Image 1 (cartoon, rainbow, N blue to C red):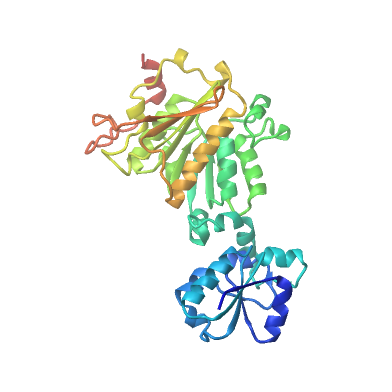
Image 2: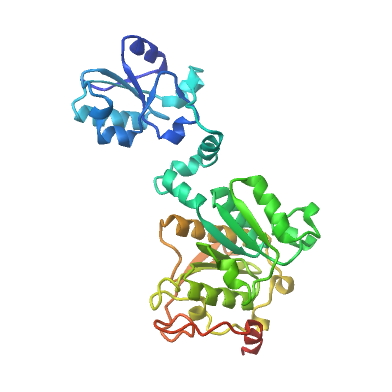
Length: 379
């Protein structure tokens, strides 16, 4: 017998005749409301052991999902398992609600409801789902800098549900920052950037704990800042901080998401040599020595297109989230260049330097150095 596709209006009559009504969406989807009279059995669970949930193969069964596709697919799976009286609701719960038919909400705690509603679009992704979102919630990220790169990266890490975000920056908000540092507003001018960032991100997602550290990263505090974190995001604007972060991340085995901007161009990479000694490059493999200052002016000297840090910072946030979820292909061993004027991306392959002073296989950590002097002394 063919699977029937029915309208929401036809469901009531079938239920009156004893049909079993099943919502095959995931638990978090049904938390937003489900058709009255339906039992919630996620499709994968139903298809894995249909008899455990629907022991009578001859019973009339009506299936519903969000729009009708999954319920029809579930019906076909049940048909293959020997069920003979099957129907799928065309248009699913979306049509059911549009026609103002009765809806019920499963009993949930306020915290569970907030979790399901806030991260609903993540939960729909098989690569994330409930388990991945919980992993994000248990994660800790260190953000160095609450400026041009740190602003967009921190915004999206907090929105994505990273559980703890430690932000280190010793600067205060200046009016010239507002053109690109979107964590801050006019009312923030003169206040510490980390305090402004904490207030903004907490207002966006109170589930994310924002730890504001009003300090500049130095050799004296870098290991304390990295303590307990899963990923480090480099939003620094100077070479001494970048070399210091690289060396500490290699020593402590932390993945480092690198980003840099200048005028109309930016670049992004992931350096994970600490966990992959002798295989993946570190920042020093790319830049054994910093360029002379005249070839690498900062934004205050050379200027920067306001949206450019937004692009690069969002790419950094993307890489950090992928690392936390352990999905996709990270930018390890690759340097991604972005040219805003040409609107063009290009990629450079990076190789591990077997003689690298910091990440060479079997080489003991050489210790922290005077990074400011190292950068000044370089040719």
